[in-house]
Length: 168
Image 1 (cartoon, helix red, strand yellow):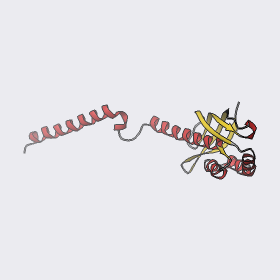
Image 2: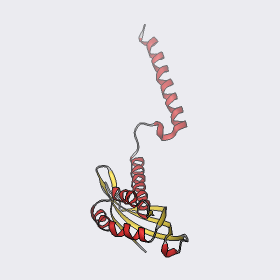
Image 3: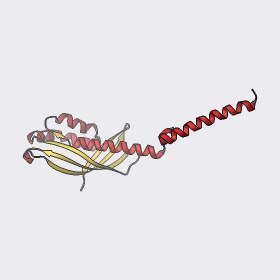
Image 4: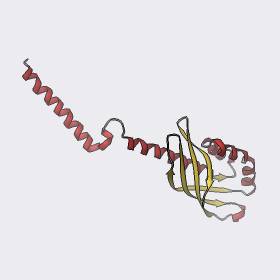
């Protein structure tokens, strides 16, 4: 086979592959391209930080006097450093108070915003609320609203809360 006879089928195959990739790219968008862009990688990391902040805020706001060990373990699993030490040192008082008051609280997170994000630390601001029922509310459900600042640290690939503050 001559060189001219071989060139046309090779070009036809290349053209067919290129058309198939363009069609796939038109249908799937940037997901059809290999790898991710720096902006996509950053967006994924921000989503991971926000998810960790949301999970810790929800764990912190949930109280059920009948299963405090399970709930406090969830908070401790997402905590580290000063926050973990402070929360851990107040566990007995928290459990005693929740039991004495027959407390229930179901939290919700309305928004999570990020600030000062780098490779291994971030600050998350959380707007949240909770529905609280205890002896003090005389068995009626009351809405509470919270704004929190969570200092986050990435440790072994996991984002953890190192400090939790209520802000005005």
